[in-house]
Amino acid sequence: MPELQTTLGPMRRDDLGLILPHEHVFVDLRTHDRPGYAEAEPDDVVRVMAGPIAAAMAAGVTAIVEPSTVGVGRRADILLAVSRATGMPLVVPTGVYREPWVTPWAHGASVDELARWMVSEIEVGIEGSGVRAGWIKVSAGDDGITPVEAKILRAAARAAARTGAVIGSHTIRGRVVRDQLAILTGEGCPPDRFVWIHAQREPDITIHHDLSRQGVWIEYDGIGDPAEDGRYVSLVRAALDAGLGHRVLLSQDLGWYDPAQPGGGTPRPYDHLPTVFLDRLRASGVDGATVDGLVRDNPFAAFAR
Ligand SMILES: [Zn+2]
Image: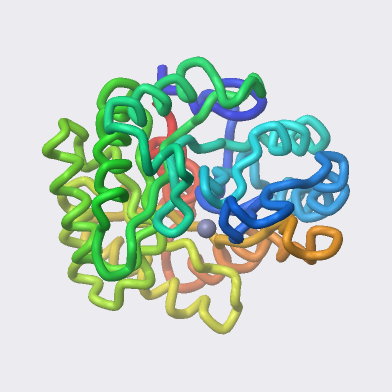
């Protein structure tokens, strides 16, 4: 029976409803060498994030996949505190972000060392927090994958092949995703264990559909601006018309507590997708069962193992 590994323990499909596959709770986009990087008191993060998370729960959100990986301030202990305070299960990644956010240890580590570390975070836990990683988040440069990013991806492929965890990558260009997929499949990781994060940033949707036909999950995760809803409705309808609705993920890439801002800054709310966007999708002629498949079944199928 597949389970989603969350901060509140493993969960089954029947335990969950709507899942947002890409929203941030805590991110630091400064690099690791900056003073105060990734530092915050868990109670302060809870105070700032409790409201947006309560609003998401009221709108029917039952779990959030948190994509802030190593290099952009991942703090499993803080995410655990937020989950315990709010009741919202969060799915925390292992993995390393792209250059220049790659940490010194990851620069120096071998593929096998990186893969062993990822497997240990998935099977044992993250940094003594008691939280197990639920997926592997990586990234690649906009103009092509660098050697160190390729090394991290190769390690992710080995860890995914061993554990069944899905790999998600922040990748802006479709041709870079093709390069990544070649590395993954060469390491024995099937295409359906790969999520193309920010696919909407690639204007050529024939690449979305081509990769999705091979099994890749296509994540349209910039929903949130009402003025952009029509564009996202068109993207979803094009995928449905191509028979690829079972490979589409929808999210907003919003939030978060930012330790670089005084008091963590002002988080952007998570509830546009469940309260407004899905109605617009239904109003465009997509039936309710299909919408449920997109926001309930698909994220569970992608991230559970
Ligand atoms: Zn993001």
